[in-house]
Length: 323
Image (cartoon, rainbow, N blue to C red; front, side, top):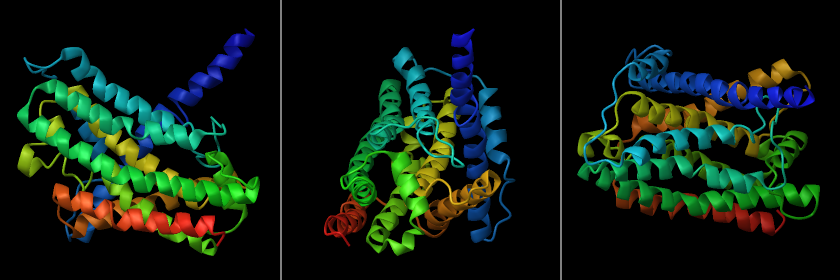
């Protein structure tokens, strides 16, 4: 009985909140807001906010076709592993002031987990045997490698800034970073982290795979690239992973630069975080993809190795110089 009492909350946290069901609902809802905002910015009515839910359930109800040349097990398991990895990240992020999993190195764990959806896209596409998927795979790998370096430097800068205040060293605990940001005022007062915050906002569209960094899918050029052979439920899982990742990246930005909670009242924290995540996604994803076209692969590589890398390096240097 005692074991059951311990197990049931764990199952609730993983499957309901802050795990799969919560990420499923909030991710698709955020995707609907993104599509609606883009439409309004382009003077269109746009789809209803609930459209991503309709699209997902429509895909679930359709048959899935497995190519004759595909490696069946890898082809089917790749999207599942991508979704699981991105949902696990939610267990580490302070959501509405609540953290399910807290340890001393969860930033490192998040850094590894956040790359798995991109790797699952590469593995799943390569197992399909499609030439279009092969082109998309190479593009996805170049994009992923281009933004990994600035992302690591951003984490190091924030970890050093928060760690210096907490224990005089670098901290890799997201809960500690979030607590430090919540207790020490707004991010603007920590001006050394402002370049890192801008760099993170520039990386979010590439992590999510939206314009102008959707070079891997590029439906008008290579027919969705790695996803060209996917259909039905498994295509829906990839689309769901993209929506959940949008929510995760927005929540991670809020936790890293503003803290997980700003008020003692839990309802105010819920409203604060929802508004902060929506604003983050509108600024970094919706606005950018409504005014820009898709970049070339070499332009994407050049951009991330210059602008975000330079910004994150500036923050890292300023932090270590104790500004």
